[in-house]
Length: 240
Ligand SMILES: Nc1ncnc2c1ncn2[C@@H]1O[C@H](COP(=O)(O)OP(=O)(O)OP(=O)(O)O)[C@@H](O)[C@H]1O
Image (cartoon, rainbow, N blue to C red; front, side, top):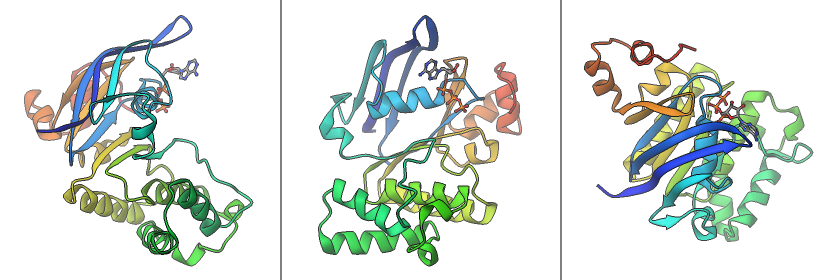
């Protein structure tokens, strides 16, 4: 299977504090790969290393075989950070117009893609509303729309469904699965167990180390657990 993202013996520290230790993993094309772990376990740091926004203290990160940070690769993926990077004084549409210009979409593509992604996140009715007046969940959804805008082949989402109600969360998962079926690779972080179950493969993080990595089914059967939460407890993780 072709890998899209590779981490080779990656460690990271902030000052003297070691936050990731010796992580090696490969994420395949068309896979929904979840990073699961309690708060502070290092999920966001892994995501920042994959995006190239942070350089590992040790080891290497590759996207499509290119060592990160690679500007060419950074232009290609879609990234949704944990905190929304939006212009609050602009409308939803104006925000997406701005991102479309960064991605250099032409006028026609811009129009089509903005309509499509706003439908995907159910914000069509709020497209001309000033973002400052959006709820927290609406801002999350607009950030997701921005990450999907240029139809990327790799999507990296840090806690994408925090603050999003269960009905919309389900429809966002349906969209993510459709993208996966088209061959899009999706990496996401979560500490929601039922969301972790929906991933093709999971890496469980605890204190900066991968304590287990496999499909949710295999993780459960290997330790005779019925839930992902039990798997986490089995490997010594703390439930969230
Ligand atoms: N810029 C920084 N400087 C110092 N320490 C940091 C910095 N960023 C993160 N850390 C520390 O690194 C560790 C891992 O943080 P990280 O944000 O990757 O965890 P996380 O699993 O994503 O947590 P959460 O689920 O709460 O977002 C934590 O102990 C955090 O305090």
